[in-house]
Image (cartoon, rainbow, N blue to C red; front, side, top):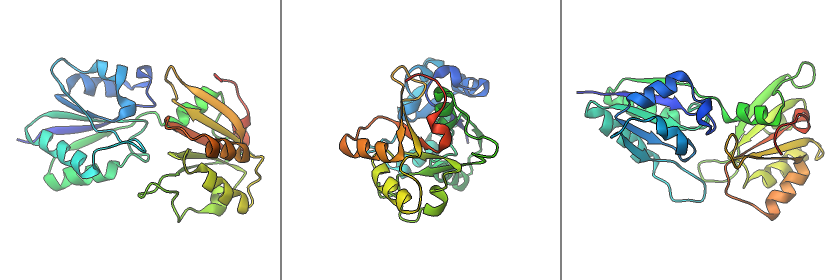
Length: 244
């Protein structure tokens, strides 16, 4: 008997930012496989007796292999269970969603995808800024700073990423941003371009640090940390209010 898997985007971590559909699926789930950033109060929506399995991956920490996570989904669903795969932010954005979908397709297990608020949108909201502006920020680009080997990807489109007229959001890039910043500046991006380091977005420990691309690269090179973060750079990063 085949069960059913709901891929649920949990948003950035604040349980009040869950969608109604996400809460409905959590309440009905027999098993929830969750990322680190989707734990805590969000799991309070699950029913008593549901299996709660942490499968999150964090840089520099022991993490389950992706093949193991995919196999767990298949095994739970093969028992007829209603399964939620709870992913932080939106699961389709740097969340390795496709690998898990392929495993379910190969096993003939039905699924659905429920989007969540992307962490980039939540970070901009927390900072009190839009991601776009007519005439000066017509384009938004999302990029990962963390390749399959844990290093800065070698095939990034640096001329595009050095476009000062775009708003650029770097996911999983705190450790590699100093190298990225050097490459961006070598490709013409001014070191004075505004930058925003958004850490632990929507959580009680949220922190927003405004600086410039060059200044942020220097500070991260001198004092790296393991907190979850996004980096936004472009003209809009210098503006807004939000919590400091």
